[in-house]
Image 1 (cartoon, rainbow, N blue to C red):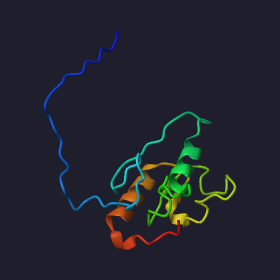
Image 2 (tube, helix red, strand yellow):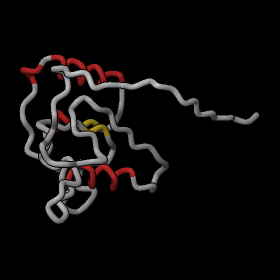
Image 3 (cartoon, rainbow, N blue to C red):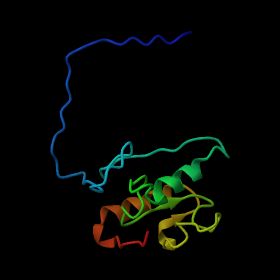
Length: 130
């Protein structure tokens, strides 16, 4: 079995629709990273492939020659679901000071329900220093 992909030319144009849902994260140019809240980012790979290194870089890298290259200090609250992150598994771990109620060591239904309940109630969200 083979997969054949064909491109069909058309006149379809997609236009941005102004809304009040997604907020701009920064006035800095952070392309090619998404610059609006409400996006999903998935980092997938086998053990040792650099997933954690990529995430640390995306979240904490300082500007390079004045250009923003990460989401450093753009989020009020960060939740971690990882057996190792935030436990000083690396030197100068930028996630080590995240509150314990924002760090989960296993992805379970209970964890997802807790996060859903927390995120539904904006009054329960406090700011994290990151």
